[in-house]
Every structure is written in structure tokens, then in C-alpha cells.
Length: 475
Image (cartoon, rainbow, N blue to C red; front, side):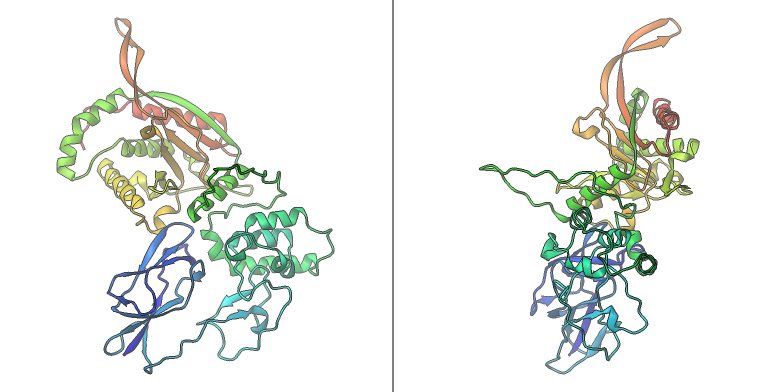
């Protein structure tokens, strides 16, 4: 008999950890090769972890809602026969599986004290001999996780480790949330009561930023800037018959991301109406032959993406991000397309280098990402690094909208429904009234770096590309 160590697999270049959502197998269950063992969630997407071997699940080393680093051992699977290449070791008939113990950073030599990181899961990293852990009255529990956002706020506000550990958490299993920290800051005792000097706090911030840089780069709240809370959450009365629905994890992430976007960016929205009659007639003409030839349905979305990429090349300062007082002009044109999930939540898969794809390539990319988004099969790298976002609200019958900017981008385009309308058409014989296919385009943009002139010209250019569609073009 041999034992196989099931590791938390790499989920993308920017993902350093994942949360255990649900165990699909219990100790003693038989597992087939490639069968899903556990559901996990990152700050990008949710997915399953399959077993690369067949065998029996001996033990689970982490629990539901635990946050685990990529590459950590999460379970032990007993396999038949000899040693399995990769992560298995031969063991006695009754192996002793040691429980993971937290390691206090202060007990490890040559490691600077970093606020916000009280313990590490050191199964593969801790020395074989370590000093006994000192009991601390300030710790609420032996294992306490702080998210990158909570650590960032604590560092910015100069909250000492002792203060952070003493904050009562209202999150799952008593975890400290962003609201807990901000409420603490608002009601914090007068300065000077802490035991950390300004110089020490600055040094600790620098050390912590280096130690957690890879994690914070993947956090959706990376653009957070510490500031006093403008207002407190209003109290809500609950009446008889009211139903209380707990937000799921993705909805909480979306809520935090939208609040951050509204706090960071100055939102302005412009509107334009486009006559897309030629485009509608063209699609009606080619959609049947295209589907028969390519095995894919062609929608209007690939055309919208192509029009946006052309307009971005005309006005490249729309394809930027803001970092402090610096404007980061993006080289690549990566178009995100907001997609509604069956759960009611929203996800934004990204078409990388969309300007380099023709209509056939864009159609296949759009359809593939949309299908896998609905099936919860997207990879973390497929929902990151977007530089401009399109949200199509037309299928819901909406004529226009004022979408929220998807940070750290500076603009987002909403596509309204296409409607038949009477319109005045100028001809060489005079003006006539005709039935035309019309739609509204609305774009929200960050007025810190995109002025009304740039935003208006860019939006009009997108409409021009759609209105000037060549009805005789072949794909």
C-alpha cells in the first residue's frame, strides 16, 4: 500500500491561495482517477479539484472554509500497489497523520514581525525543531486568518498586531472583515495608546508589502486606498414574513468590488444612439451559412468587440489604468465581457489580445467563454488582466444603462437592445421617414483621466463603426 498526497493545484499565475468550499468525498470513500474530491474557490472563480489517482480517501487535512496556499497538501489518498510517482510515500499499515499546527512567526529565527500575519501553515516550511508556542491572551483563537484587504487596511491605519487580534470578527467563524476594521478605526482610542512607533509601523508596512505582494496582486480589492468611513451601514428593520438571504461568497466579492469602484473612480456616463440596420440585415443573411460551416452561432457580441478594439486603437487613452498620480497606458487590448451566471451572480471573462482576432476567432472566443462561464469551468487567468469591459443589457430588454467601472479599468460600455424605430433619412431626393434598427450605447468612464471630450469621441467612434458596417462583407 502507498499513500498519495493530494496537493492544492496551481489555479493561475496570479492566484496564491484558495478557500475550501465543500468536500465531495469523506474519509473511507473510494475515489476514481479524475473524480472530483473537493470544491474550492479563489477570488476569481470556483472549481473542483480532481484526484490524479484511484484509491481510498484516508484523511482530509483541511476543513471547509479554510484558506489554503497553492501547493499545500489537502488530503491523503491510499493507493494500491507500489509507490505512485509524484507525491506518494510507502507507509506502515496504520500511519500516523500529524495534525497541522500553527507556527508563530516570532518563534522562527530571522523572520521579521509582520502585522496582519500571525501564523503560517508550516507543514512543508517549518523547521523540524521549533520553540514552543507562547500563549497570548490577546489571541482570540489559535488559528486566525486575515485577508489581504484586512492586512492592507491594518497597515495603512497603523493598527498593531495586538490591536488586530483583539478586534471581534463578524465574518465566517469569527473572521475579521473589512467592515470590522473600518468600524474599529472609526471608534479607535486616541493615538499614542498603541505600542508601535511611526518608524516601526513604516518598517513593518514595507516588510509586509514585500511578503504578501503576490497575494495582494490577485485580490479584487487591490486598488483600495485607506480613508475614513463616510457613513455607517444603516440599520434595517425586519418585519414578519421577511426572508433573510445570506449573500454567497461571490456576491460578497462583487459587492465589495463595486463599493471600491464607486469610492475610487469619478463615474460619468455618456450616451449615443446608433443606426445598426445594415448590421442586422448582414447577420440575418450570414448566420445560417456561418453556423453550418463553423459549427458556431454568430451573435452581435463579436461585432461589438471588434468595433471597440478599432475605437481603442483610434483613442488609446481609453485603454489605461490609474496608479496614484500615474496613468498606465496598456499595450494589450483585452476585452472583458460581463456574463450573467445561473446563480444570478456576474463574472467577466476576458478575451486576450482581442484586436488580433478576426470575426471568426472572436465568435469562437465569445461562445467558448460564455459556455464555460455558465458551467463554472473558467480558469482564473481567463478572468484577469482585462483593459476594457462590455456589458450587453439588450437581451433583458433594457435600452440603456449606467454601468459601474470594472476596476482597475477606466471605462465600461453598455449595449442596449436593438429596436425598430421610425427615423428621418436624408436622401438625394430629400428627407424620408423609414423604419430603422436603432440601439443605444452608454459608456461610464473615470473622469479623473477621461474627460467628456475623449469619452464622447470614443463612444461616437464605436457607433460609427457599427453604423458603417459593410453589409456585403464575407467571413
